[in-house]
Image (cartoon, rainbow, N blue to C red; front, side, top):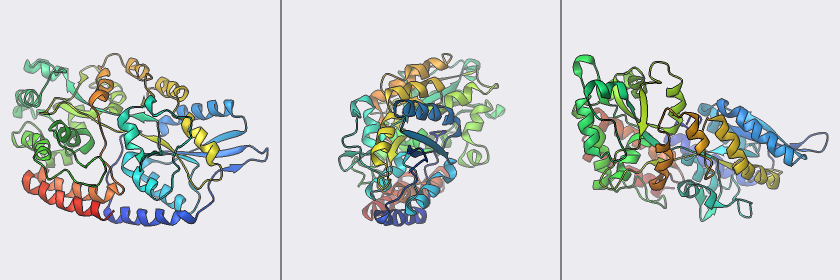
Length: 423
């Protein structure tokens, strides 16, 4: 985010500039791949998470062991600069041969011919969660080899629950159960809140909109879902918790992050992604006090948003065939074993998640794996940043109480649709 705990939003102007720059890449024919003096093919592999470097290097070494004529050079760029640097390198014809891609940016790169479809590659989509395959499919073709995934769970502080005499969250919890518990766990005298209703799409309202039976964006990425009663219900779940005093206010969560409230024991419940497990396990203040449960169910169920990274191939590279073979290998069963052993992310390859679950047996990490059964894909379009920037601006006013959820979502639906229509 994390690795996979990603920053999702970008300015509209930046998105438009990126789209224009990427559109120029059709004339580019060079890439960073090269041949060393011994005649070996050298492929560059672009990633953004330093914590995953050892696992990625082990995967690269394993590929070279099977393909002695190819060596892999890791190129790590911090996520904050990753896509800016990638845009520049793509435009200049010097992009890595294989690189990490996320859902919000995928369609922009696929629609501009920057990345190559994996047609004919030795990859079976049935080996990966359907939501991830859908996320990295464009115009009917799969462009990304799913690497890892994350879903969302409800973390809770057992100590605070015990002190308040409230039963722990279970798989059968509903929104009403969560709201009732949040009220009982709130103690103004202690500065304690039942839940952190943060303005967080992936962690909070993208899930609740699906749980209400709605969608942020249509499956084909052309229509906003924000103008529906279901979307309103999904947003009001969180704003009602703030209004009831069961959550810190938007301003309080600006001054002190929602996660910091949870880490300090001032919030009893906090929805967060699978990437958070090791963060909490490594925090001496709360490691033994917390656990995770499935999300509470709304009218349509307890859906979680699924997101994950994919390995993609530079379509303009000099070694597309070798790069494709490596991209597929880096998402293969053998690579999944290496990633699982590292404990940093959940491998996307089916059947390889248990090692990750077993790495922290003190937590109910199976909740994240079970979420796959009803998971919905992270919302994205050809120019996701163009509408998520508007989304963030309008919903910040809704969370602050300056605009009603109903009025805010009508404005958001209109502006988001205009952005989608211009793609």
